[in-house]
Length: 280
Image (cartoon, rainbow, N blue to C red; front, side, top):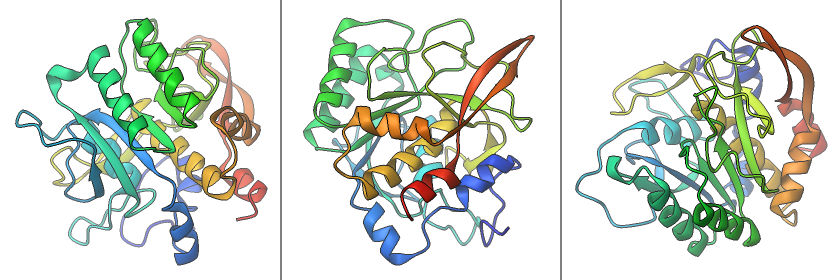
């Protein structure tokens, strides 16, 4: 199965099976592009993206983690580097945080801005270990506005990561599996995790857009779930965030995976089943 004409994105076979559904049919791409997706992260640059910035440029912003995540989701095909994202040229509404804004206050401002732009999905591959009432209320407000919020569960096994750990229907907490289909040993295994996606040896453009590099962790699992939710919203636009989450969870393979010396139940995204259910 050839999933990318110029570059093999990952060694993870489950990721390959998801990537094969990246848009190529113009009519499908047009439908998917109607879903407004916001990415909130540190240091998002627009070099390889169809990028709509949600605020004025900040002089202290540098390319960083957010560029990797945004490129994985929506990078245009770069003929020099031979790389394209899961949904090439997808319009992305990006809120780029600087390094000194990577906290609860910064997240709240970013989420409120995304709400004001009437986006359908917010993808957050970052978080804070502080359970903050103002942040929780802001996330609830986003869901109340019909926005699906997708968050990485975090890479610290024993520390809660917020917003992912908020018990709010419509907020989807994403964990990461490895190439052996077990949970990555250094990632969070909180009971709040809703769904797992590939998270090992996932290729994106480097933070400075110079070359394709492999990354691992829950951050790079988020774009796969975001892709799935884009399809759900595109083909079932009337579903609210809670219904989107429920629909997504129904399209999973459930099995017992290893995590260190323990077993944990995993709900793993089944993209083929999802596409069949949507009649795509």
